[in-house]
Image (cartoon, rainbow, N blue to C red; front, side, top):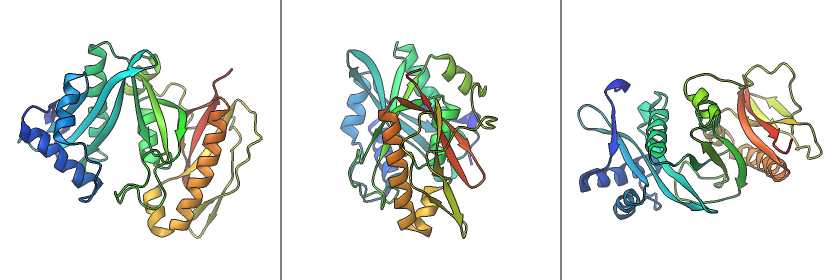
Length: 278
């Protein structure tokens, strides 16, 4: 495992750099993954204030990469982070956050302060990094945004995604990246109501029917601790989680709620939704 201090993050420069990134995508999402970003797009993105950069060990080994495009959305210049991946042995090392920090610093230096990306709402680890560590929020849920891909990471439960919004120069972002979890409700004294209850049986957690009549200013939406493990144990149950979370998040986001935090419990996690209209 590489020392984080000795890792260099820099833009891809040579054809070999770009080709190594394409191979890395196959290693991450499966050798038959057909949606790899090719060399030509990686190169062109850099000319348009996009980012295609790798994290390298002191020996020059590619340990991870980040790729995103910059464009105009409703008259505002924003960055869309399309891919981020690190080697399996480094997935809990903080390298992903380090790549995001590089992306943020580079974009802020260019005068760009808003970034979007998507993440699977059932992936608890990703949600925790995005909402708690980075300070992103989400006001949009998209059903099957990528259709049915041929990556084993996506198989069986579709490609529903939350769209993250990251205001990179906000106090929330700065505090979270400095480890100041201001407003993070890891120990909620006044626990908001849950949109649906969770039943535990034989070490499996099962979602109940969502309640779509709640009007409290804050709500909780449960998700599994590990959807990938649950898929292996019971694909049928994983699909039930997809449907329950989809119905809950779609309804409440469409009615003005914002996904703001992730609360980690012993048997499952919970999104904290806040009514953004008040």
